[in-house]
Image (cartoon, rainbow, N blue to C red):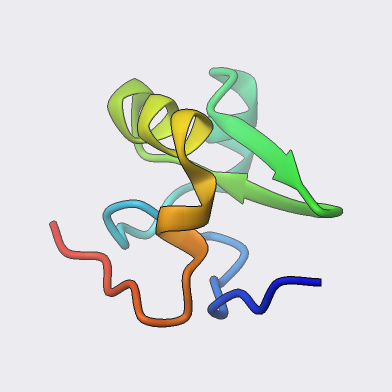
Length: 65
């Protein structure tokens, strides 16, 4: 199993923004990977993560807005 950095349940793993989980789910801005749900602030971050999740979950990745 690959080591991943810790991401808070309401944190966008791409940009680091705090996200309203229920609102993200309602807008289809959530994804599950390895049994963990990730939520996103917008479609751009969602698509970036979808296309290359390992980049954003790498232990040395530091999100910045």
